[in-house]
Amino acid sequence: MSRRIFAAFLALTMVTLIGLCIPLGFRIAAHDRRIFCLRIMADTDVYAGQVEGALRRTPAPDPGAGSLSTALLPHPMRDTTGGRTGAPDTVELYDRTGRLVAGSGRPTEVSVLELREVVRDEQRLRYPISVSGGRFVAAAPVRGAAGVLGVVVVGRSDAPLRAETRSRWAMIAIGGGVVALGALVAALALTRWVARPLRRVEQAVQALGQGRLATRARTVRGPSEVRALAGAFDEMAARIESLVHGQRTLLGDVSHQLRTPLAAMRLRLELLAQDVDGPVAGEVNGVLTEVARLARLVDGLLAVARAEHAPAALELVDVASVIEDRVVAWLPAAADAGVELSCDLHPPQAPDVGAGLLALAAPGHLEQILDNLVCNALAASPRGGSVVVGGRSVQPATVRVTVADDGPGMSASEREHALIRYRTAGVARDPASAEVRRADRGGSGLGLTIVATLVAADGGRVRLARSASGGLLAVVELAAGREQAAGTPVPDVSKPAMIFTGS
Image (cartoon, rainbow, N blue to C red; front, side, top):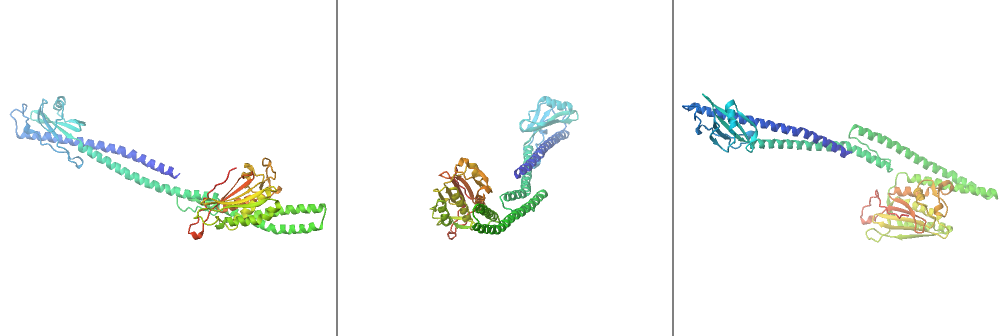
């Protein structure tokens, strides 16, 4: 928009300048030409008056026959148009028959017919056109006691006129350039005055869309309409922030409050299961299973609420150490499920990266991410299968953490919807028959959602792909960190690098 405003303002200014300066230049040039013609005609009358004065001082015995002589030729003058002194005038004296009596300078090449017309009409011959290559010519009759005795012809170079015209065009061009430069500065100022607050509102909208709910435009300058728009946006953002925080607080409070009655219910049911047998015991065990599932759902809701709260400060985390700890913690569960759990670590080889795999993450986030991914992988893998937790540095600024299993995997559509809350893959071993179904018929449907939320809070990304064995491969990428002792600044995590395996 700023470019369009700038272009429109500048185009309007240029059109206005061209529409004013060019006609003005032509009018001034025509005026100077007219003044030049009037000056040469007035000087021609002066030359004719000088010849007539000389004739009166030296009367000829026969004025009609040879009274004009070379001695009567006036001294040529120089034109001073626009303060510029031009070349001497060409002055020629003709008798009434058109015969050249005397002349100075380059001939004017006036025809005999034109001279006889001056003699007959007894008036000046005016030439508003240039003749003989850049000269203006004018003629005036010389009168004596017996009538017109001859004609004075004056030729004057138009070089001073052309120089004056060029000077005026240059002045107009300079003036137009100064005005255009002023218009350019004014257009830039106007564009910034209008576009800067709009750009700030646009950036605030983008930041709000990215989840930074505390973003405000706070535009205090610019047009009143833009200030009103910024104020309306700030009110909307404040209301959205209040609603979202209220929803998160409510979700966290409800989840936290439900944990106590669920624990008490589970304890009572476990005590009841010890005192009953037969069909009643089966029903109690079924209720215990549902209560355990409900407890996992509540824990998941609480984890999501905490993860979506204000982002925690990022710290340097030893990825290799966390992976080894979580693998050791999940080994008993993997043994019960008959699944082999192992880790595959590839620390960076570059000496300037630091010892080990270091990434930027909030405290405890990577542990929760691995716990959810390993839990899902163990649940999906068949007995005798394997789950591999990997970690490596794929770029100087990126650390990749992977969890691969030997389960049925997911189709492309299932992987696309797997990060949606309360949705989980089916338990069928044939990937073609797997379906996305509600969490109340299987898992909680929040494990991958928690992973995605925590990774996004750490400035990273998570993707799902097909593993080499046909199962599911979860790829988490975080911004790499470096040893603080090395004196290297912490990298920017606003734009983390992303490399993931496709299916």
